[in-house]
Length: 127
Length: 278
Image (cartoon, rainbow over the protein chains, first blue to last red):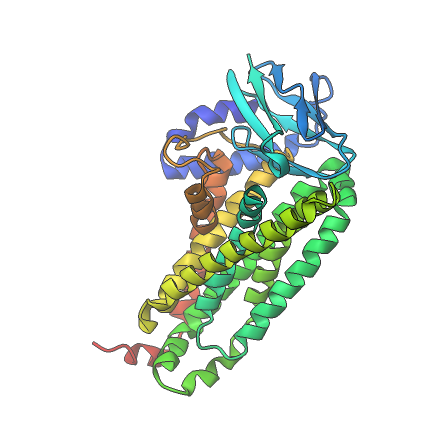
């Protein structure tokens, strides 16, 4: 998926090259989709218990794709939501899901459990 | 109770706005009430079904079932909204003139309302399934929660309906001649926003490339999570930090639908033009 990151910088151009690069990358992206590029990447785990994230702060490497496993140990569903990471997904009770995230710029990315926002808060810190 | 109501309102918001736009867009069409009701009822039924099978859905397609489902629902809605607009470019003027002449609205009965009924159903289904899971979570967490649940649900739903009514009557204040032009644009933007949202789900599923993580960042101005942000998100597809591909989908949807509308409008018999006063 390196091609995609290179294209990001060109994105501010005029509409025609923008559309062309968009179509190119959709096509190339589609081809690359099947490659198991993620297998070697590190995994991180977040646990939801009693409507809280554990750990509430998770350090992850910046600049590379990561796989984040979120385990919901509660009996009820939680919606993992992050405007910063642009992720939203319902995780049913006693189940888990994996997010593919990044490559992230260094910084703090907040996330919440939308169904219990008062307690379920956390952040990814990309360095 | 307030926290519950806020979440209920949040989930109801999108469906409520879609319903109000659809109702305004079908003004003067007989039977629209039952079509929209069918849409809502179907959506609620669908939402409960999706919630019951949430485990299977989340686990499906190697863990990407939910994203693919959400994206599919959104793309189907985009097609239906687009189809409606194309249909309106052919028949809208006729319908608008019927609105002015008393009793003539019956002729509008040929309008295929099922497209918009499906749009309503999908909007209710998508937001509703999350709501069902959320409410079920509260309901099972203890007996003292039943007041919280009922109160929060009632107030949240009431808020959604109030907003929907405000939007609907706001739209009705538009002169009949221009109403379908306004609803046409609203539906166009709704469709483009849904296409962009669908694209975001496919990025989340790692099926589509992001093409730029945040092409711009307006989150200090209007945050995604704020009420205004959510309203704009539904109405015009606002995202504080859009992916490049979301902009691509947004623009592509607008361009394709506008082209189709132009194409079909040109095929109108010339007699229509004479009905426009000089």
